[in-house]
Image 1: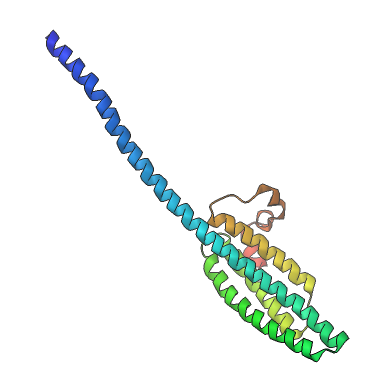
Image 2 (image 1 turned 120 degrees about the vertical axis):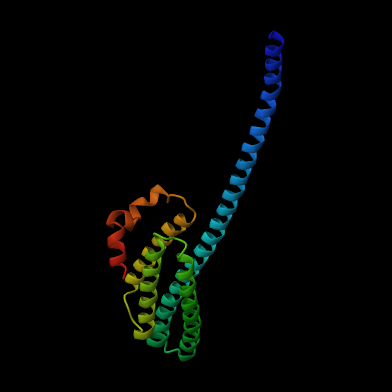
Length: 192
């Protein structure tokens, strides 16, 4: 009986490291698989967040170019009486307006990746787009209001970008966060 007990002890001492090694390999394999999956997901998030940010920045830049071009156009027509200059500016505004339309379409697609803040980006982008269109059509408008709309749009983009990346927005900018102060229900209503 002593020999059998010794045999069991010897077997257990030999099998324990082998069992730990096999268990460790299985756990390591699962961890590596999970890390690879998370890495691919983070890569996907990073790519689309970067593309979203580029489109939003280009959209905002086009709005700025149109606003400043309209101010130049007013000066060319009203102060300088420069018809050739005005025609060049009008041509540029038409080109940028076309780009703005295309970017608004792209913005709607990319903002879908932010389920919570994407609708806010779309609403504020549409509001900015319509304000810029009205400025072009009427040849006048409240430029300070458009600048404020651009800030609100940019702030919504910041939150959506953070959401796409699955990160919390920078707390130092929290005081500017209209969603935190108004609540999500009111933001949708106030941006339409």
